[in-house]
Length: 344
Image (cartoon, rainbow, N blue to C red; front, side, top):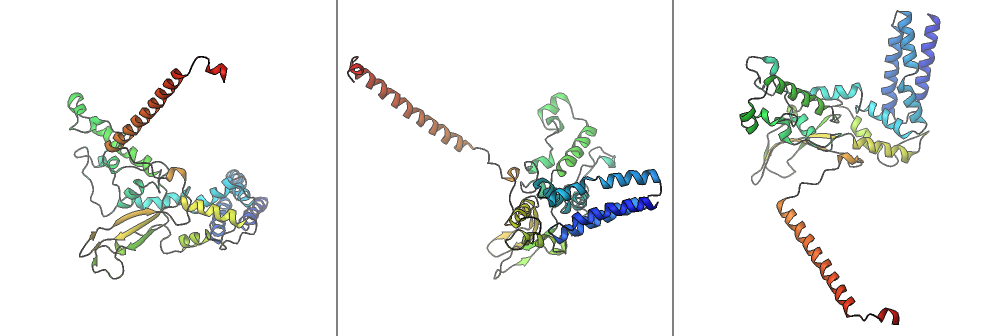
């Protein structure tokens, strides 16, 4: 037993040694708590075989190796520990997303199968709808509002007014329920959760109007009431990072990349003016110093009929210019004498 305690203490000291080299107070606090929980779980295990197995997993854990590699300047390892600490991956990500997967104020939708309570379709909260339809909070391309009401994985036969339903018959209600919940589960997992929900009033100073939405209607999630987000934004500014073991510019770049994976969900309260009427709602944005990932760039809009007509006119004009140039070259070649090449 004493040998086991010494081994656990040795692993814990290895954790503390590497955690103490991290450049940010928040990172040191988070991973110190993680190390304490892991080592305490090993100590509380009474079975010797299970304790030995847990100790082996903790001593060779990927987390310890990632922290050591991050302190040595590994780009991928440092991004990994930042994602763990700020809920981009891991258990914290689920804790940030869980409140957004339901809306207690929304009415329950009617069941797809009459009399079957378990056949109710999923409810997309306003916060989740905003995150799903924004390219700044998605790992993949953003969804359109129509995808939420009629998922793309459903066949056209699921629409009772479609021609397929009239020819082939109605689609199975049970399969429709399963498809809707499957689409709901696979799409919310592609969302990057926000750390908190910010509140912004749409009424400017000097405007006359009344706010229809208040901050009391906004749910408090994650790090609401803390300064974690503000501290992270400050770390992306010059001369605000005290990196002892790593270059400051390198650290600032890592935090800017993290802000690109950290959407800011803002609730704008409704406002009515004498001239304009603005309705409140949620919006997604990024911090000013954030570095956007390639998949977060907004895609180009689809070409309209005017765009296609303009493109065809440009293409035809270019073809006419090329044909005229070729015709002039042919005339020039015909006017030259056969012996001109030898004379030259």
